Image 1 (cartoon, rainbow, N blue to C red):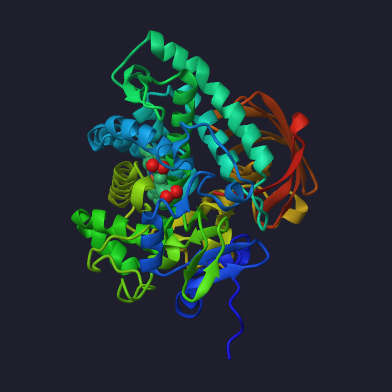
Image 2: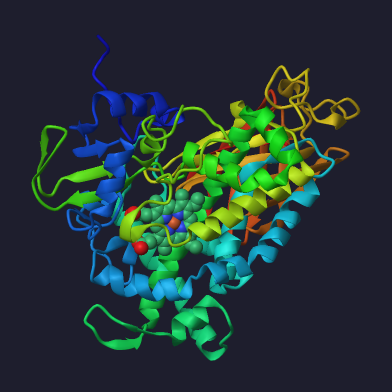
Length: 524
Ligand code: HEM
């Protein structure tokens, strides 16, 4: 007899491949109860679909995230993802008038340009990172273009959104910290909204400022500035991280299915169905949560009023009763709706934009790089309790070099360059390093470019949308030290102290008053 099933959404090991557990849940425990975290979970397609449609029995009044519901979180009415009717209906109806498919499709050419801007510099190279090079930036800029947010404010917004959803591996979200961050993020928009009020344009923000709607009390009026702030936060929050993860999953899945990738590269008309299959196969948001509003019985078991129910979208998407060979990736499978964008009154309002971004990103990737192989040894899977995906997904353009005994290929310049510090083996410090700082808000990617003249190292570090020269670089034995004066999203001096071991540079990054955080860097 097989052991009892345990499914823990905070288990980072399980998050690497949750699908065998999902299969067991569907088959053996279609109504699962987790005593440790006190929630129920459903995993069959029919159950997920019908519960998401039942807005009266399954409430979003305390949000759609496990921790928020357990904390009985209350949000302003205009945070409509976090509301039931009639509050939800009032704001959703307004948003449906404003976020139209037409408006979303209008930004296609700009999104294509953004992709080109990110991907063109990689042509001729041998590495790309689906997240650092595309996913971290493009979705944020796409939502921002839709809203009309100026480029200079865009990164700070993405950062504040990431901060709100990030969890430390194995731990639930800290609600108090999240709400504090939310408050800070909201206040940041006020200035911009005031400016746009005086400088109307044809963007969504202007429409938010000018449109009238019937509020939940039945009064016809314009939105207040605070309501606009909240709505912009909901849209940016729902649209950035999810689409970023979609780009990572496209990179990973198509690397592991090279025949299908080559077929799509030869025939770009297959891109939309490929994006759809990736969305089904690896949904960026694997589950949504609801509060159960009265005692119910499901699969012969009672679920009490007030319980939290997790709808396992990712499990439903592979339900064999709905999708033949659900655990296999097949771009030619019969087109059937999946649960990735939810269902019912809260169904994703930005799905057309997400699909468009996925399509444009994949077309632009395949046009330049029809072949790639992901470097999973150096990839970082993120651990949030709402979104599952890659924080870093490096890949070799073409195929993995035959002599790649370690996961990072030696830089081409290594043979000609002078030997580095004693303990560092064959790797030179000069060149480009992909740095990841495990900051208070989750992994922060950056790029460090080092040059050597005599015994002196100089260079620059890029991240958060800005590039600054590094200072005081020192190499003593295999010990390194440098300073990066970061300017975005805030001005802060970050001191890196670490060691070069093999081809990995690691240590601590001290970010002023914010404290010290581990960092790792690998040669690009
Ligand atoms: C692959 C990308 C995306 C995925 C997987 C995704 C998934 C979802 C899901 C599952 C929901 C329903 C949540 C619930 O039932 O509680 C949702 C709602 C929502 N999404 Fe998306 N989304 C994506 C992209 C976007 C984009 C690009 C935007 C913005 C332009 C967006 C805006 C929203 C909003 C505003 C809601 C709340 C709708 C409501 O409560 O009525 N999403 N999304």
